[in-house]
Structures are given as C-alpha cells and as structure tokens.
Length: 268
Image 1: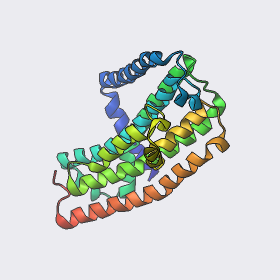
Image 2: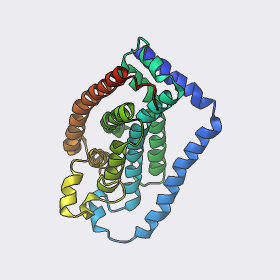
Image 3: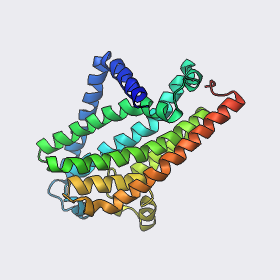
Image 4: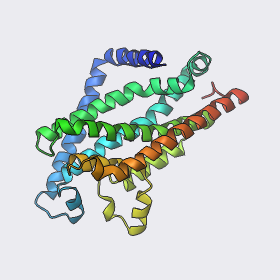
C-alpha cells in the first residue's frame, strides 16, 4: 500500500513541477495574505484589546496562526471532492475503482501531495513570522507542532472524505463543505477570538474542530505551552480523528457501492 501511495505522490510532484509558474504564483499568493494581515494588524498596535490578552495581546500572530490552519481545512474540503469530480468528468473514476487498489489507499494517495504542499506553505508562514519576531519558534517545539498539524490534518480529512461521499451520490452542490467552511470561519476563532461571540454561540463553537486545532496551535506557538497545557484540545482532535476517519471511510464505501448498484459512478 505504501508503494502505491508513494507512486501517487511522485506522480503529483512531477505534474506540479511541470508548471513552475503556477507553483510560484501559489507561493506569492500565500505571501499576499501574509502582507495583507500584517498591515491590517497595525490598526490594533498599541490598543489594549481585552479579548486578545489570552493569546499574548497581539493581533497579527493570532490571525496568522488562524489562516495557516484554515488552509488545512480548505485543502481537506476541496481536494478530496475535487480529485473525485475531476476523475468523474475525465471518465477515469470507474477505471480507478476496478484496479486492485483499496479505496482508502486511493483516497490517501490522491490528496497526499496537496497536504504536503500546504504543510510547506504553513511552514513558510511560520518561519516568516518567527523571523519577524512575531513569535518564537524553537527546534524543541517542532515535535509538538507536528503532532498538532497531524491531528488537524486527520480531523479535516475525515470531513473531506464526507464531502467526497456526497459528490459520489449527488455530484454537485455540497452543503457539507459549505457548512463547515462557514462555521469554521465564523465560529472557529480564525479571525477573531471566540470570546467575542454571544454566549450561546460560544457553546456552539466548542463543537467546531477548527476551534480546538487553533487552541492547540496557539497554545504551542504563542504561549509556549507544553503538551500538558494543550492536552484538552489534543484529546478532542484525537477523538475526531479516531471516530471520524473510519466513519467517513465507511460512508465513502457505501456511496461507491450505491453508485455501482445504480450505475451512476461515471455520471457528472
């Protein structure tokens, strides 16, 4: 199985390397967002923003970590369903399913490069922030940071596989992706702390995976907490991963079996 995943990763890497300008433009697009919020954060310089005191008091490192994790969610929501839709429209989806490759391996291999590339972008974000003195990034933090990002990727992947299942059954118009994108942006604490929300919405935000991903990441980078200091968020992300991945995988297998039974796998 690892050989198949590795082969799919190399395939996507060669494909991406053949479009050097597109890769460079993606990288420049990431820095555009970085610079945009850098100047936007200067409006808060010197202002005692009470809701940010919990995270060190500065807006730029707060929103920088939020954008970094939000990229993971967008990759998970769009890549699984996007790869599947592309295969459907090119007429290769049915051909892939009759190959001697397990469906979970196909799903993992088809999105691995996107996660690797996005991790590269996040690392650049964080290194740029560290070089500017926005926050401290030490070698000792890297294992904990890798754990947070790994659990975040697993959590978001379970949601992404659900969106792909929807595409297999209903083809277009994905309310799962729409709902998660909206809820994560508004309730997950990406652009502003959850404490500014009304009390009843704060209770809802506690069920949004993005909230706990950001709490763990900000606790590591902005507050210098150890694993013990972020263990609550890690437990919740771990439960999301352990329950969500098998459940979403079974849902996708059900969607594929239904498509085979109704003859709609190749429809788009």
